[in-house]
Image 1 (cartoon, one colour):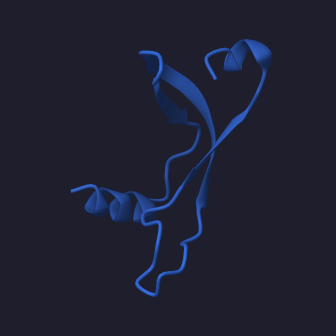
Image 2 (cartoon, rainbow, N blue to C red; image 1 turned 90 degrees about the vertical axis):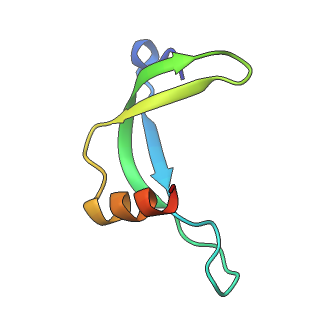
Length: 69
């Protein structure tokens, strides 16, 4: 991931707000699109911050923001 720009690899980011529904079934992922490495810290584990090339859909952002509180 750290060599993304130099290797020309494209990273696609997927997201979902909840892993399971109230019925116990897995929820689908939403493709947020291509992203670029913004920063990375540490190793084993490494924390990577990605910069989306397009904004996240507003409703998904709001749903995710409510879930993280």
